[in-house]
Length: 252
Length: 349
Image 1 (cartoon, rainbow over the protein chains, first blue to last red):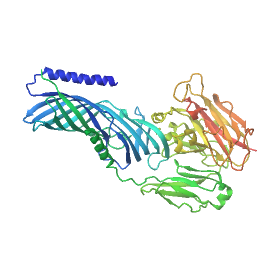
Image 2 (spheres, rainbow over the protein chains, first blue to last red):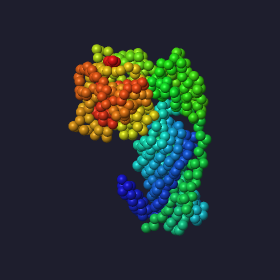
Image 3 (cartoon, rainbow over the protein chains, first blue to last red):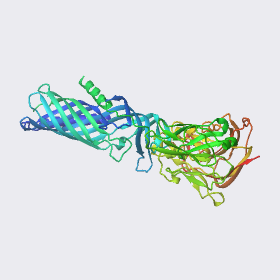
Image 4 (spheres, rainbow over the protein chains, first blue to last red):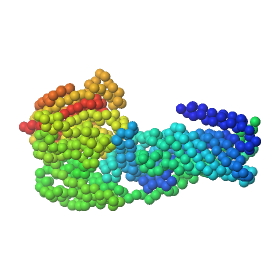
C-alpha cells in the first residue's frame, strides 16, 4: 500500500516537473516541489468536559509531498495553488468520563451499541489526503511571503482506530447497567468523510534563489465524521501545521 | 527545534483547555449488604431491571433487616443506608445522582421459590431492551438467560432478536421456552464473539462482567429447601447445520448438542459458568444424557446423583441450566440450533 503512495508522490513530482518545464515561463509563474511534515491533531476546537486528561500524545511521522504553482497577479501579489499528498495523523491516549458513544453495525443493520464510556482511550489516526490549496500570496519584500486562502482535500486512505481500556461502559447512558471493559478495539476508519476543506494560512521565507522554507496552517472546517456518526460524540476536525522545504524548479 | 516547539505548543494548547470535571451523572446502588446468616442466597442487584432481589431466611423476613447500601460516588439514597426494612408492603429505594439530574428507583423483591414446577406460561419483557424472561409458576422472577448480555451489543429491540424467548410451540400446545443459537453481530464481533449461544437458567445475569469474563456473568442457582431426587421435563432439539469454533471456522466433524442439567450445591454463593461443573460446593447432579436431535417433545426423568458430592448444608441452592449449544460457554456451536424446554420439574423426596 505504501509503495503505491510513494509511486503517486513520485508521479506528482514528475508531472509537476514536466508541467513546469513544458510551459513557457515568461508569464512569471513559479513552480516548486516541496517536502515537509504535518504536525497536529484531529480534535474538537474546544475539548468537552468528558475528556478529563490527555495522558500522552505523539504527532507521528506525517510527511507531506507536493507541487505548487504561483501565478503573478499584480505587484507583490500572487495566486497560489498546487497538489499535496498529505499524511495527517496523531496518536493520543486520553482519560474520559461519561463519554457518550453510539456504534452502529456495518451494512446498515439496526444493531448498535449506545452508551457512555469511562476509562482510557487510545486512538491512532493516519489519514492520507490529496490536498488542493488555493491562496493569495503577498510578497512585500525579498525574503518573506504571507499566504491566506483555503484548501480542499480528498481522502485517499483513512485510518482511525484504537482501543478503550481500564474502564466501563453503561448500556444506553449514565443510568444503564455498568459493563466493565478491560480492553476493546474500535475501528472507525470507514466512517470518515471522503473529503475535507478548511482555511490555509502560511508564512514563507526564501533561503536562496532555489530554496525556501514555509510553515502553513491547515485549519479544517469540515467534521472528520459526518454528523450522523456518533461513535465519537465530539466534532473532530483536522488541525494541522505543515513545516516544509520547497525547491523552485528550473526554467528550461 | 522549530518542530519540537510546535509540538509542545500544540500539546499545551490541548491540555490547557481541559474543563472542570462533570458532576457524576450515575445513580447506582452498587452494593447491598445483609448479614449472611439472614440469607438463603446472596443478594442480587438486578441492574438491568432495577431490582434488589433478596433471598431471606423466614426469621429475617418476619423481623426485617438492616442493609448497608453503597451508592455511586456523590449520589444520595432514600431511604438511607442503615435504616431498617420491614417486609409486607412494597419497598423501593431512590438514588439521586451527584449531578442531581438522574434518578433511579430500585424495587426490593423478596424471592421465594415456592414451587419447583415450571411450565413457562407467564413471561415478562425487559424495558427498554425488549427481551423476554419467564416467571415461575408462583410468579417469582427466578429465571434469566444470556439475553441481558446480548442486549448490550445493541441487537434489535424485539423479543425474537434474542436467543431465548417464548414460543407457542410448547408441550401440549401451550407456551414454552425456546432457546436458539444466533449469529453474533458487528458489535459482538469487535470483542471476538461470533455466535450468541442460547441459554436459560435459574439465577441472575451480572452484566458487569459480561465483557471481561462472560462465564462469570451467568450466576447460577436459587435457594431450595428440601431434598431433590429427580429432575423431569420435556424437550425437543434440532442442531443447526454447521458447527463452528470460536473463531467462526466450520468444523465438519462436529454436530451441535444441547445441554440440560440441574445442579444442587451449597450456597449462599452462586456458581457461575466457570465452576458450575467443578465447584467443590456441588452436592448432586442430574444431567440429561441424550444431547442429540429430537424432532418431537421427549420426556426426560433424571435421578439426582449424590455420589462424590459434598454433604448438603442448610443453605442449599439449585441451578437448572438449558442451552442450545452445549459448548456455548466457549462460543462453539451451530447457528440455528434450537432447543425447546417445557414443564420442567424438580421432584422432592
